[in-house]
Image (cartoon, rainbow over the protein chains, first blue to last red):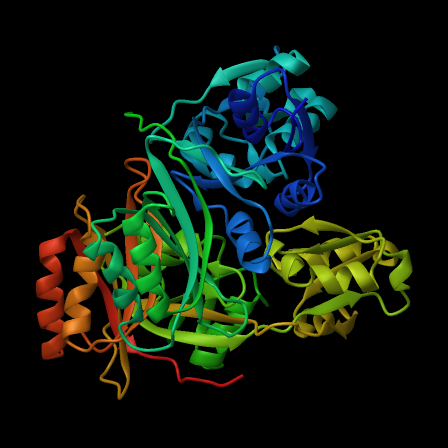
Length: 277
Length: 277
């Protein structure tokens, strides 16, 4: 039986993403931090790990990016990606009046995404940040009449609470990475993620992008993170269409070496299917 | 008397940065969120605002970046920048034993930056995230024997607590923006910040950087943020050396128009002095 480590606790969006990918015949273990998910895979306590990498409203999950920077020689690579819509619900006891709610608990990102709806519909509910949406519901259970949580519908079912759908104003999706020591099989549409540091000279970023332009390789993402060694020096994460075993990608990566002081391929893996709104 | 709005509460790093810049002869008003600081300046309740934009360990302050995206036609521009070293202290009651501490309160970034030192020196202290380092000290005052906070030395003095220096493992600096409706005077070393959206075509980022390369303009920073309109579409924030009134910068910005679907100059302002370690 395959073991999957994921960023817990149970019933979070990451858990749901892992289950959507690996199904009911796998064994799941939740880990308290992104770092612990990586460690579980590195130490063979799990064959695969699932961690969030990016949300379409909130941006990058910096803990996950920084784990790649801090452990550049980890045997763990990106094995795939999962994309998933996020739907928020206001979770309350069945007999609670929204006007009576004094505190609304949830993960900071969920609170931020629902801020406007909450201001209108839960006028006296002060936001309270929790480590996860699952934790938020536990706070509601302690004092049901005056508290609410924002989270997934499944959480309400589990605790026999009411789930009121919060309409999405904007497209809200999260992208998760599957990490593993195994390499994925060939795919019709591959994607590659790299980590690089530029040489300290004017035009270095432009020079770094030139090989991709020349080879006709389409960049899908560029993200910068502090190097943490020296203030205002950065690492770049770049995603592009193609597999590191392709000739044109090999040529681009070789050329890239000239303008970078560090270059790591974090993995070539099947791209998640494109979806419309 | 000049009024300065800043991201509060009082005695935070942003307050300190504002005071370092505007001195004791200004009037200060603290605001609860980044958005409120911008609004105070937009509605003439303050002439200047001070907000954090970036930390050398944690990266971008996304609330501040997103405020520029969400209010693109605001009359408020970037007027300057302030750079400041961050020094953390463990703040405890004078007679507290570190081994007795059960909870350590602070802002999530401060907790993250001191994680290793805390694990070694406050072995039983579970981290508790607060909205600010000032809030953290208030929690300590409620139950002094078993609690500690991480924050600035000045906070300990204010509450007559003890401040134990936490050694920095890595260079820890924060950069703040000064925002205003006024335009700054000419400087010997100017910097310009722009916000742009790329046209949806392969090589668009490369094409956007080309005018800077051609004009010999040095990019000091590039940061991407989700557009929030469509999943996996991004805005870019670019900082470069030079003033928007310079001829070569004008030429570059004009050329940039061809590969962008949106382009806003957020301000040209005096660059903070470069400092060594």
